[in-house]
Length: 275
Image 1 (cartoon, one colour):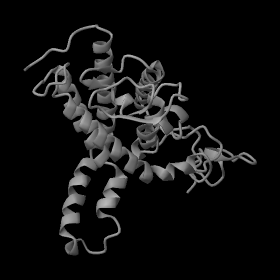
Image 2 (spheres, rainbow, N blue to C red):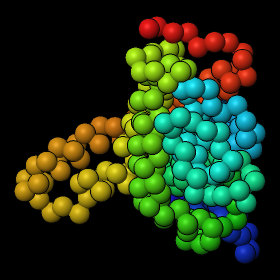
Image 3 (cartoon, rainbow, N blue to C red):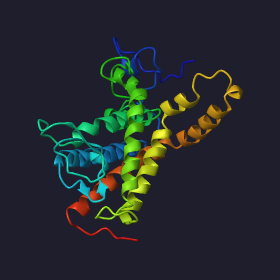
Image 4 (cartoon, one colour):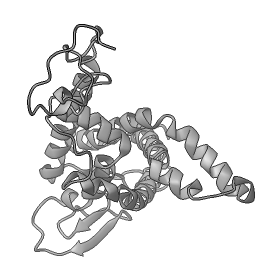
């Protein structure tokens, strides 16, 4: 039914102005501050990108016994700082001259970049695709994730397995924080609590992943015939409901854990000990 406000379709128009789209003169009808959420998202992600890039290329101040930065664990190069009992795996020899963090960060970074929530976050925050619900995107055409490079988002399920492996290694690192600076067991400092909180959030975020939910309970015709998997699927589903919160919480916690190790390694303060 005509409303009397339909704009004249432009010849050859594409995107939101194509003839097949709703003929609304305004780009959107929202009156709230819809731009605030994508702007905050972009600012938060940009802050983490700047910080993590600096720390990844620093190649210093990432170990203070018994704490090792999660950005540098496991340490896969020969130029790693020797960590007694820590995850020192000298897979790459003396020819590797760059920061060892660059060898391991590709896996948790790949997991987060292809994560369903993070896709939404940086698509809206950086690409305005779309900038918000009911707000037209500025792009002339939309191809989704069907072309290179975005078609690579489909490897998210494989990055999940690497993320689980990294989480297991960081769990081991957390266990090592119950030692003192002389590697004697029975120690607990403030750093221990920082690492415990970090690994709890990392596991919660990893297990709340949509790929994990599919692995646990996907492709089942009858849940009644698989009660264990159904129970696990329900648990993962409850975590999945908070996937966005866990994504941000774990992102912040891993940066806090790295910063804490950095401050200890640079002598900014001594690790407070509880026992």
